[in-house]
Structures are given as structure tokens and as C-alpha cells.
Length: 583
Image 1 (cartoon, rainbow, N blue to C red):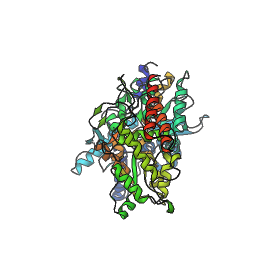
Image 2 (spheres, rainbow, N blue to C red; image 1 turned 180 degrees about the vertical axis):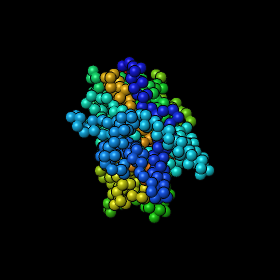
Image 3 (cartoon, rainbow, N blue to C red; image 1 turned 90 degrees about the vertical axis):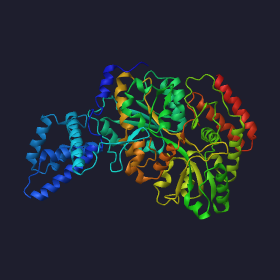
Image 4 (cartoon, helix red, strand yellow; image 1 turned 30 degrees about the vertical axis):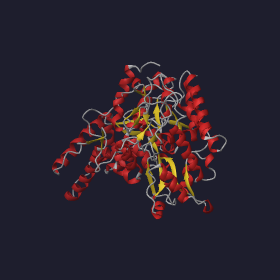
């Protein structure tokens, strides 16, 4: 669809953090330090007068960093001087270009107040200096010194990621920002925070949410329109190859300076899964591996070790399965079609079998297949047969409605205490982690998929990236790119976690001390990444992947129902997949 114009690039780059400015986390720390020093000075001097400029600027910046609306009345109240004096001081700041007014309504009768670029630049530099001076006076290293973690900088435990900052200028988007997403807990958290993000980007946000299958259909239908209905769309990771090849998504490097995204800060598997042909087509919004959830308390009481192999899963499921008491061994995706198709591909990976003839590499298989012309399905294989036999064994220790269970249905009974183990994405952990009444709350262990005899533990990476439609009107691309950066920033990702999400695509967010305190899942996922267990090859982003998933979900469902044998199911799936590759 052509590259973004140079003037659009300059508009996007305008909002980048100035070189040499303090890290975003230094400014709130400096504000807190300054307020504490002021309070101590007032106590020590006893006759000190308030500084209205300082008080109003600190209040304005605090609200700005938190994405809260600020009015003149609020700043006047924060000034700690008489009303008339405060109004004059506020007018001084407006006239000097340190504070700007923005209309809150179409009538223009109501305004909100915001720091200008100049004020923000001044105070970022001031924050850097004051924190350095404080650190040097205390005899410690400057706070801006950072370690490097997995190729990505992260904040030391003494610091945490600051709240999202309001953009220096509101985004100019006629009708507001239009977003197409998946209807899962993380995107619903984004919807809950919509008003706050509207304040951050300076325009209205309209969000449409669909189930996974309907989301794909709508994204494909949208690509056929002359101009996209949406500025940003959520894309399931396995769709990247198909959407790139069909021209559904614009390559990110055509509309944004990808260095601004800080790519090394993303989990490697999540960032690489967003690529096709060496180019990124989306920014990880959720990096949510599928794990095995298990009840640590039940396993401890039974004297059983964590189920870290496929055989141990079967053994534990057999032990805990007690239908007469309404308890079952394990839950997983066995609903016909997409749900079981995903489960089958991941189970094949557990036994060491990729779904197509990927090249073996260190840690698994190479999934960047854009330049390959020799891909063929590898479904009808001995290892895939082992995966089928494993699923049939799981059937024996599963709930009676297992053949209709998909992503949510498998986690809900686990959260209610009816099931001892469940395969599940981390994004669904809030079902029990945020429910104090759940028996699984505080009693859940997290493991990568236990492996078969010839496989290795793997945590198949799932989740979504946010991308820009290839047919988005050119005049909207720069603003959409700016919104994309804002929504996927460390500050935004941390905000999602604080409001219930259990996905952290960035190392810096997973290392944040506040985030670590919320759930053990972040530390567990980081450890899996360290061991190279986060992988996206189990569902490679090839253009035919959606069709293959559906085929496998149909044929394996017939197998689980006893309509066909495992060997026949694999042969039928192989034949149908080969046809998909030739049409």
C-alpha cells in the first residue's frame, strides 16, 4: 500500500522521548522526592511560604503521568495560596507556554490543562539531575544506570515502571481511534481502561471485540474494503504469515520507527512470532504461553511430584479422577474445530513433532518459513500417533463434557476446584488468581507442557499482536502508529497487569517489583524464557495454518468420539492438509 510519507514520520517522531532525557520512571520518583523535601523544609523553617508555581506544576505532572484529567480548579486548589493569587500564577504559566488548554467538549466551554512539550522536557532533565544528585549524595550509583537483561534493559527492584504518560499533543483522528480486538480478559481490561487511554491519546476510542474465529473473518473482510474501518487490529500469532501474504497487515517498518518499540525488551519468541519474511507485522500486546496448571496443595497431600512429563500427567490424572465425588483429573481443549486443532498441534509439539517439515534448530524448530517453497504437512507420523494416544488416555480422566470444552470451559472448573490439572493460557489465570474463593487461588503451580519420551518441555507461545491494516487511509497512519506505541509501551502493559491481566510481553514488565508481587506467573514465564521453553514453532505462522488447525480439530474430534481410529484420523488429516497446500 506504499510507505508512509516523510512528513508523517516526523509527526510520529515528534513524540519520542528526547535524547538524554530521564527515563520515564525517574520523573515520578523526582516529584515524590521534591514533595518530601518541601515538606521537610516547611517543618524546619516554620515561616516558609508556599510556592504556587511549584505546587501546581507538581500536581499537573502527577496527574499527567497517571492519565488523569486536570482542570484549573484542581490546580488552583493544589497551589496552597489564595484563589486570586493562584489564578494569576496559573495565567502566568499559560502565557509563558508551560501549560496548555485543550477543549473537553465540542462547545469549547470546558477545558483540561496539560503540560507542554517544553515543560515536560525541562522537568525530565530536572528529574534526571535531581535523582543523580540524590544518589551521589547518598554515595550510591546514579539511578539511571541500568543492567541488561536478555538483551533488554529492565528497572532495578528499587524502581518500578511509571504510569502511562499523556501524549504531548492529542492524536488527530476523525471519529476517534477505531480498534478491532479479541474478546478475552486482557482486551477487556483495555476496554475497562478506555477512558484513561482516551485521555492519554487525546481522542475517543471505539473498540469491537469478537471471538477468535469471527475476529479472523472480520479482519479478512476488512482487508477487502477500499479503506480500513479500523486503525488497529488484534491478530492471533499464527495468522501473521497469512495476513502478511494476503496484504491484510502493513509491515511495521513502513509506518513506524521500530526502534521506538524497544524490540529487545519483548520476549524473544513473542517478538519473532510477529515477523514474516524478516519484517515485523505487529507489536506483541499479549504474550501468553499455554501452560499446565496444577494444584500444588493436592499434589503435596498425595505425595506426588509436579507432573513434568506426559507419563506423570497421566499418572496424576488417574490418581485424582473421582467422578463419583464430582472430581476429575484434567481438562483441556477438546471441542470440535479450532479449539481441539490448537490442542492437537501443541500436543504433537510435546512429543517432538512439528505440524510441517520445519528445520530442526537449537531449542526446537525454525518457524520463519516465508522464503521456503518446500513445506509439506507432517501430520501422519509415528510421533503424531503418540500424541493421539496421549489425548485418548487423557479422555479417560477428563470431565464428561470434555468434547465441548474450549479455552474458557476448561479453566472454569479448574478454578472451582473440580479438576486437579488443566492446560490453559496465562491470560485466563485471573479466573482463579483474582478469586479469593477459588480453591486454586494461591495453590496453583505453572509448568511448560510436559513432554513425551522424544520431546522437550515447551511452552507454546500464544496471544495477540496489534497491527495496522494495510488499507488504512494514509492520513490516519501516523496517528495509528502513535497509538500503537502507547498501547504496547511498558507503562501500558503494566497498567493492564495492575487491572487484572496476566500477560506481560516485555521483560521489563515481568521484572517490575509491583508486577512480581501480583502473581507468581510472571516469574515462572520469565524462567521458561530463560530456559528457551517459550516457542512459537508448535503453531508456525504459515499462510495455511488456520485451515490446518480446523482440519485437525475436525478429524481428531471424530477420533476422540470413537468414530475413527487414530491412524485413520491422521491419514485423513494428512490428506486434507496436503490438499490445502496445493489449492
